[in-house]
Image (cartoon, rainbow, N blue to C red; front, top):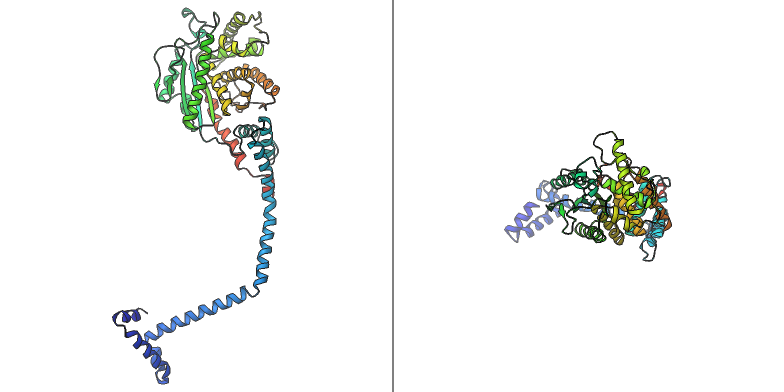
Length: 477
């Protein structure tokens, strides 16, 4: 063939000469031997044989495979029908229960309870024993009810930490009660560590792919933090709160100001990070004492049942430190709410009065952040004892806040259990689902959002179960 092409390119008459030569060889018997010796003819002969073999194969294949086209089409249709019948139950089984849940989730008039229950029904249809994933299922249902979808978003998470100093933590010589084993100045030192990226929350936020923001709302001193992920609010309480054993921790105006700071910064960090989940945390020497007083006031429980060791200076609980804390809390409750010698308050203490008289700037800011999260239907991971105290104040002010709370850790402080019981009662009174227990029980008591950060991947796992796990019908099919 190469020779033919070469000859054709050299002369337009060479191809005709070749054809003429081939004709003469085919019609002359005495040239048959020469014919097969001619290389040019052999190339053409091979080509003809190959074309003939290919045509024969196509003809046979057509007659065997399509001998009865009508029957073939009928068989194909029957096969498609059979396949459709086999797959349709699997599709219907999943789509029916899923579409019903989605319908309720997406309906504008559905209540939180209806959305939660619809999601729980769908979770019960997944390939597992009913309720076998425990709290993961409750978290998945709560998350879906908030975001109104069976595929909730948890990839972007922000951590917002508020920091402030407490007047009761100042040394007695400086007008305080010395309620902590650590000096008040430690609060600022922790913020420096957070700014450098070496503190606990810094390390765990990186490990769990969480954006960290820290806001100084009441750290003592005019030196401000203005850089990196730690900033001082322009509206911060420069002197921190006052000693609540002698006067209200904050004025009404200061308290409102701190609550508003919390609202503003939550909106800001959510807008910046596009997060639908926020971990709340705190830093503040003395805030365990303040939180104990808040819980005692709002639950009408004696301080002995609320107060724990707080921040330990050693691995052993120091009973003398606990006794001192109980004494300080009783003194504050007696001053502001006329509590008796047992420190038990009447059951009509308002949350606004409690946070104003007993709270800290950082606790008030967390209350504001939770109130704002409720307005935006954002999930809040509640860190531990102090954040639980803030949650109790927030749900007492607005019960709808119960919807957005995901309790990350069982605190070593006994007072958390009292606060959770009260939150549970408020939830039930407003027909809002309540999780019976926090997620982690690891003896965590560091604060600084560390427990909440550890629980981030649990929340992500709950979302994955909801969006990706097969139903039992699909598995059995």
